[in-house]
Image (cartoon, rainbow, N blue to C red; front, side):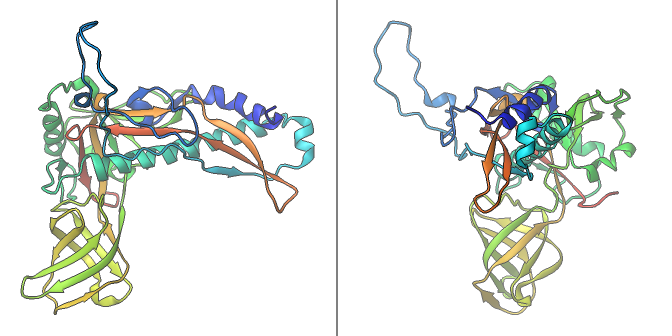
Length: 353
């Protein structure tokens, strides 16, 4: 039988979960994952063979899935000291509702952050910056939004009603001076959890969320400066999401390879990031960190991004092995996948205007 305290929290979660409004809630919802440990596989349409009804029998097909490795177990633990008296009282009062609210907010923020990083670093990645606008992270202008919206609408099957903009709060600070900006004059819905609808630009809704990547960091394993070629080449793992034109800084174990002031990325490959450098020849195989000096705001077609997520989070009590107390764990199983070309990154300065 489930722990009575878990049931108490679940009853509070059920109501809250029906009133959430996050990035993950804005995209197409697929069926729930089957259980912990499952791999969520969303096949491409082109990988399935469709035959006329009753015409032939087909052998089992090998389904080609997305390049994305879906995460099927995201279990952030919300720790709380729960004495035995609380179990006897079934946590009567406001404790369960308040803890459920904070747990759900943290869980959904975690999901949103992972989803936004996936959109920015994976779905919108192209070595020629084909899916980036205002890549130099200058102040936002109406032309930047027009370019992003126009490029999305040029994709087959795209529709204006499916587009949405997700801005970091620092990017939102400059919106008030942009022509075409229409603020949302309605009051926030009482009891609603999640990201606010701030307004619209060119008819596209604009949401504000700190889950949008800001000063995203990428780990590196080596660097090399070649004075004759005027290059500083940094070795990174596949999936870095950095494109030419983005401005970065670089910090290494030794100062020789540092890029302390903002430099512009001149080219990238799957495992390298190159900036200009006129220093003396040097190289090192050592850890480092690239920092993208900007906010990677997102403009995408919600009908082409999909999330498989539990409609209701799970809750259970986990005993501490070295204490006379327990932890409340709230978890959700989810995965995500999308189509390249239907998500764009709209860069903006890393700090407020």
